[in-house]
Amino acid sequence: MEKIIKIFNTAGPVNPEYHYTLEPLSRISLEDIELLIEQNKYFILHAPRQTGKTSCLLDLMEHINNGDQYRALYVNIEPAQSAREDVKRGIKSVLSSIASQSVYFLNDSFVHDNFNKIIEQNGEDNALNEILTQWSAQSTKPIILLIDEIDALIGDTLISVLRQIRAGYTKRPKLFPQTIILCGVRDIRDYRIHSSKDKEIITGGSAFNIKAESLRLGSFIQSEVYTLLEQHTKETGQKFDIKAKKLIWEYTQGQPWLVNALGYETCFRTKELRDKILKKEPITEAMVIQAKEALIIRRETHIDQLADKLREERVKRVIEPILSGTVLSTSFRHDDIEYVRDIGLIEQDMNGEIRLANRIYQEVIPRELAWNIQSGMTVQRVWYIKEDGTIDIDKLLRAFQEFFREHSEHWIERFQYKEAGPQLLLQAFLQRIVNGGGRVEREYGLGRMRTDLLIIWKHSSGVQKVVIELKLLYKSLEKTIAEGLTQTLAYMDRWGTDDGNLLIFDRTKDKSWEEKIFYKEEQIGVKTVRIYGM
Image (cartoon, rainbow, N blue to C red; front, top):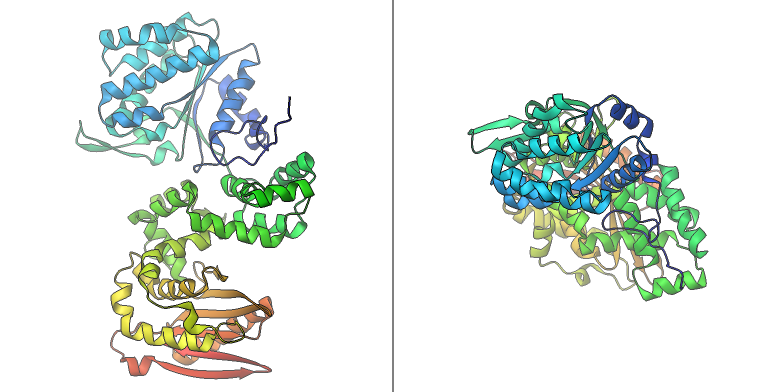
């Protein structure tokens, strides 16, 4: 039989036979989970989408069932989402999922044979409780139930499931599952569930106040990223050079789907890349950069789901101050920050500092927010390319200065994230020019009071690197320029370029455009920085 070539997995649970795999149970504290089970506890496992939750639950079920103490069952109840607030349909779907899974994994047909009768006898508001009671009573071992996609349920259906589990809690372990693990994107305490029946908002913590712990599955650490990449080398002989490995880590910060997606994109996406495996040609930094661009441009499902979340007002309240570099945000709410962290967009350090989760998200967010504007622009790259193939940056930025004067009020009003409007508008303008021939690297964050952009443009004689520093005018113009020059020069030194540009956005409403628009150059040592006011 021909050997199966493993690949990096970007869809569904991992299968070690087909995928490069980190041991799922190594990513959680198995000892802590076993203690919670021993103590008859009910608890939560949550993590952003596509981080390996399902793989962990499936491995945990197998691990438990390999012992002789419990019977564990994994069940995905997402199909019940289509029932929405039709509780009878929703509960029937949940029970049907438990029935089919218990037959498949445990060779146990009790739920399958009895759940329809129990629904008719007990009604949808008690059927789940009753089936779990009867199933546990006739089981030879205590049952451990692993429920995945709990937050796929909606409204009264979700409330009914949580309350029926809570009602059976005191009967465990002989007449109810000894442990139930609820798994989803968010910690259940943060649920705000709209009950159409009761005409009120029910909190998850209220509906499920029997939770003992909330465990969060994190991203890969750097050594785990390298271990996963090295599995490809061991399998095929093709190496990732050290710069490529470091860049994958820098781009992803270990987000599991992004790591696997970059791995797949650099190794397997095209026949040309697959041929490189046969030739054992190494994966290079340039290939990783190209792969990152391809993922963003194609708007893979993971990226598309991320973009969809940006439309939510509670996400906007967290992300907009980060984009604009605000020193002190008054829009932050604890619940918003928890939500945006739970969906994986941000990380929060122990000192409270909030930052975007990784560099790919840092690039995706402004590009996505500015996409409609960028598509509607009529600027053409050919207008700004010199005879030697380089970009005429001064001509480009003077054109943007004029564009901003004429159109900014109209265009910025079209942004949902208006406070970050000037930054987004410039990035849309630049992206329109460099797409296909170069790229824009971005650095921004809460409290930075600036956005650092680096244009990297390939031409026939080499690579052009251009630093563009964006600052909003908060203090006097002189102080803003002085700070901006220091920051621009530092960024120029970091990237080894002499082409530095500082843009000052003055959003003072009662100033005329004649006062805001200016251009000048500052000579600092041997370097010159062009300054554009607008």
